[in-house]
Length: 144
Image: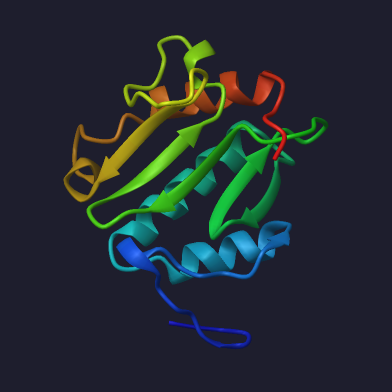
């Protein structure tokens, strides 16, 4: 995988090392560098956010894409490549109905882990994910 400045290094779990930056460009560079099937997950997440939250703010921080409401401060969602799955963090996930299934040591955060086999028929509940995205974007963002 190559970027504007040469090959993109994959960190542990296959997480792309993308320079910190604001806007769609760094996020698209991250998604393009996601290895194998994980790229499809990144593309689908990005497409759902773009559809459900027009004008969503985007950035890459700490080698992870972040999404924020267009007129808000802070962030409502990020994702990160792990070895066997893509971890999606909803920063105010405990307030979502129903909350995403993955618990966190942080009281407000909930996770959704997307595995390769969940991309097939019935494994990816895009309607549920889209609802979580809409709900999350309506909450005050997490400042980082």
